Amino acid sequence: MATKAAALGVRMHSGWGALVALSAPASKPDAIELLERRRIVVIDEGARGAKQPYHYAAAIDLAAADKFLGESATSSARLAEAALREVIHDLGGRGYQVVGGAVLRAAGRALPALHEILASHPLIHTAEGEFFRDAIARACERLEIGVSGMRERDLEQLTKSAFGSDAPRIHKTIANLGKEIGPPWTTDQKSAALAALLVLRGQGGRGGKG
Image (cartoon, rainbow, N blue to C red; front, top):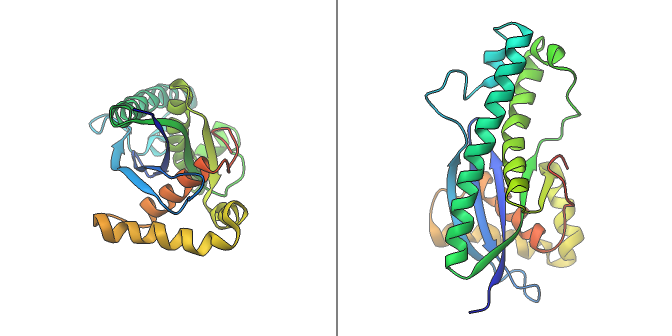
């Protein structure tokens, strides 16, 4: 049985993410096959500070904070890798090969040094968002999956660039997937699905920090 190309899209939250896997023929990209929709957890929920690592780090001294964040990042990347490996294995058994993945990114600027982050509550929130997105990007890299970092605010323009006048039809097709499979099919799943489709279309670029 010939394998079909599939792609993953992930939209992260604090400690967990919405993952969507899909396939679509290049000749008819709106003929989307929704292959997987699941919630993945990338923290040990019983561990101290796991869900809000930068908030926890802000309450301890800088050296301890740096060590804690490094250990937490390693743990989250390991759990993300295990979750993605399971998805890839399941899809492989069904005749699909994952050829790439996308992590939805925020629109923020590059983060400053750790001591500056921990002194600013808004930056703590920003850093935590990037922390969990980075866990997925690192997991993709370890699994040798090309990973695209797509800013959510760029999805509309990327879709127009990829599909031209068919972009509205693509949006409608993705929205209607929720009617077929039922909830949850929120912004999380829709955006992740669109990002995955763009990966299959060759959009978004490479690089976890994209």
